[in-house]
Image 1 (spheres, rainbow, N blue to C red):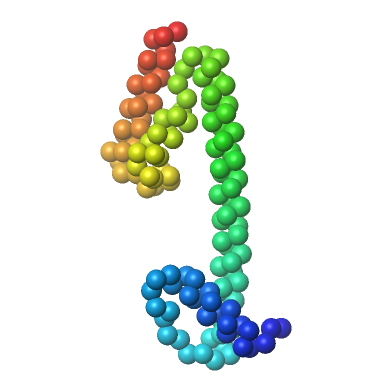
Image 2: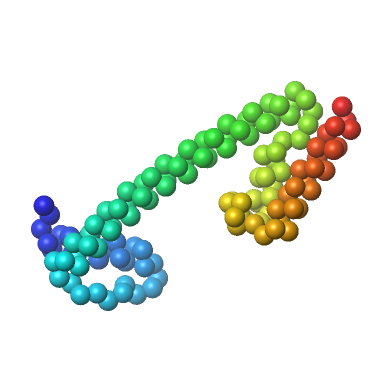
Length: 123
């Protein structure tokens, strides 16, 4: 087990990291609170690592899908869904579907539909 002072230092560093520009909330420094906060910091660290791995996996999959879409587009002379989604993300800065308003979602659907209609009329 780690010495109490080392855990207190780790907890203080973690609280500073998650507080950002805000002051660290005051708390009673004793063995129990230090243990609880240390446990939370460890769980937070593991969760951050897991989230990072999921994000990297999704980036890899997105890259693969874009590549497959480009290949499909070249073969069939059609639009690429990834180009519509990428341009939408660039315009709005939003990544998750839940970040979009209803109107923005409808706009993306209209753009997809417009590009698919122009694609089918070209063939």
